[in-house]
Length: 237
Image (tube, rainbow, N blue to C red; front, top):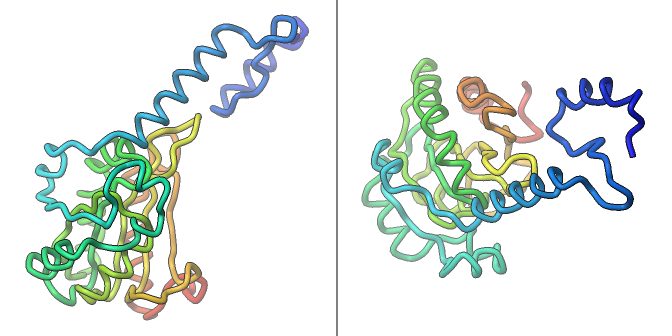
């Protein structure tokens, strides 16, 4: 039980975090409103994992779609390795449709949260393109990878051979945010790259890292990566 004398200060503190703190109890049980809130957020997280990105959104930004070796959502969850590998026909589509050896290749993937893409891409993508263009960078042909994992950027890098690649991907949803997106970046991605060679800006959503602000920061990081010809722990920021 929360003492009455402490309730107002606690409510003030709770305004500064979405975390479940000071929820209170009736006897040994949590309050009904907190149980319902938990179930609502859990359902939103599940929907994000099992949802699909709208074709209208992909069409809005002229993103063609390719697949990984994932056969279903259950397969995606149980076999992360299959989300890192492109389907054979995907490799052909990418080679056929994409500009070769651009300065920057932008890739979008649903990852573990389709909702993250639907909620943020309309703000992040145009701002990112503007940011990259402001640095005078040549941008490749953007596309969407269904069922992708972060390391799929390595195979894509070997096909297109960009100087740098940005992967906008849905993060694993939590009970606080089901629409959080990450931007993974790597200089000259290829098979065998270490995780320490990648860089990431995470928690991109309206209650986290603001999407437009994140896009500007991504552009700055990409420019530094290309100028220094490196990324990850070796980049001087």
